[in-house]
Image (cartoon, helix red, strand yellow):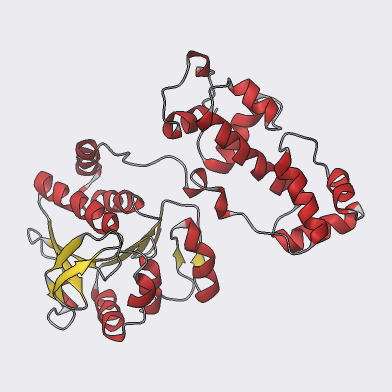
Length: 337
């Protein structure tokens, strides 16, 4: 579509029964705040039929338009929200057809969380790079092998297609869209109003180790994995794990990678990161003690591993996710070089 300077950009939110309410209200508030600061946006809510739409939490939202009432030719930015109801919505032929028409003509096509499943049903191009909530990334990869699914970023831009991770990540996406349209100053003002990061540090892997977890298929490998989880800080060389499994080191290495999708050393490191995450959020040990107990040896090694794997430092992670204020001994300088 052609946008005329001074005219508001139409932001069309697609909702359905069982949508996640924050996927709608979070980005909607970002665009409305931006409009207060600089103008430029008009938001509409579209559903299969106009009228009340019940969210997954029971909140009722009034959809202004049904797909039979609204010509999508005026859509500038299409935002497809997520939620449990997407599994039914993506099989609604009329809704999918409207999303496909809107996507063809829109300047930008976006989704929040599992909304990408509805976009995919409407025909995302082969090879498009997308993200979604970490808990549904494998399903998306399995059902749409032509898409390049990256489950770590908070949001991904691939040309005119923007997709985001779960729930509050929709606000990160909306801020990026505002910055793309109206500049950094307006986006920063909106972020300040809403007490948000303009660019949130780290990716989804800082929130859940379920991103990588996979269960071994055979008893020997289960024995090795159980030993790792029982004491993450213990010595877990390939020879040690092979002894637990009753296999030769070479056989253990090959079967471990085949059954769990990554080599033993990488798996051990991720389990140690999980243990350190729990220690940082549930206790008040100094970083040196956490590092030793979880198998990293030194606070410096812990810091480097956190920064490489999670995109944040241990101190940042602790301050962000623990429920109480850090103790005085958590002042170790651990910012990345």
